Picture 1 (cartoon, one colour):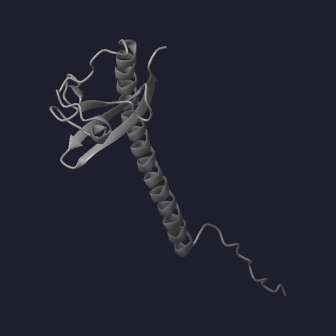
Picture 2 (cartoon, rainbow, N blue to C red; picture 1 turned 180 degrees about the vertical axis):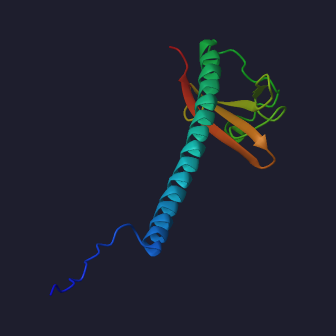
Picture 3 (cartoon, rainbow, N blue to C red; picture 1 turned 45 degrees about the vertical axis):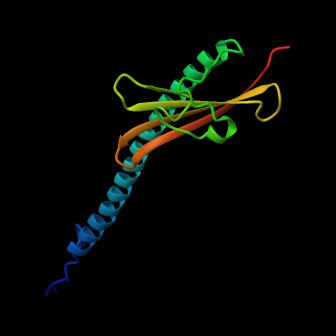
Length: 148
């Protein structure tokens, strides 16, 4: 007599629970990568705006520093010295310019004998306006000494 031996079956494949847990883990990972990608795009956009503003500022300061020290740099007729260094906008700032597309506003203000006699403080304020209440602003200060 031959006795039937029990046949051992090896389990193959994955259970439905294992598959669902794997899908959940991968979904969380993909969502995290998506949020990192969005943050990266926003940072790159912000960096590009600051680079543009910085280029505009450097160009204007080169023009202003290239002029003679005694050249009148106040275009608006409002020369209010150190008190007006933060003025922004046409008719308020000592000088004002916009980009051809109107998206970038550049204001500059000059204060004579500030921070000490024989110097001029030049403050450039560049703003990129992207909508009501939105935008980026970059401010740079330069001190120019009177030539001896």
